[in-house]
Length: 230
Image (cartoon, rainbow, N blue to C red; front, side):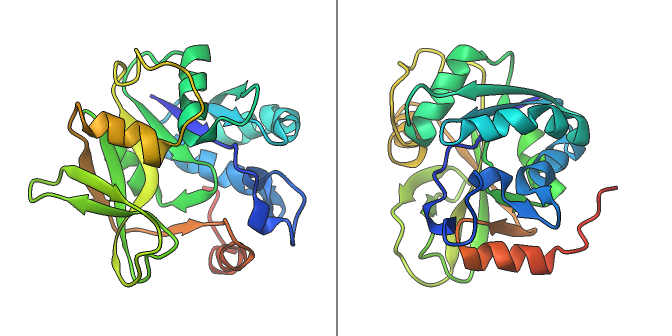
């Protein structure tokens, strides 16, 4: 199974602590992305397409080492200009067409292996969800009684709730006819998909952390200092 890994973020909030491409921020002597890729391999993913633009040359320089470390076949697809999360995926699908159901995920988020395995082993279009105590930083989810996604709600809603973990699975045909354009996954591609097809929501209760802020990066580094490589 293939995963498309979105590595295009500018990492604006991390620039006070690093000048490295966000996915490559070092954690205990290795790129954060290396840890994500190892999780994918353990979940049964055999290859990954890295979708990048900002400081893509840094990803290119480390591509061979990342592939060897994770035991994955890696391909780098570079956007000609910033295309947003949705556009990055559409561009990569054109350059490296899927051969079956595939995963899409953000390169700056860490999950347990079980999270990736849960969604990889399902069927059809799906999104991974996680319950958090404070959801204001994230997009919330509206889900029906049958576990189908009804809507993605904007960031800023406070309190506990169900959020988008940023891991998706799509069938080979889901975006086959979509025109390649700059767009957002959450604000454009997914709402357009919901208008024509069902998207299942898969609950995940394991570890979830993104490194989008200096505080969350520091928390990851402290909490997972002894993260196993086995």
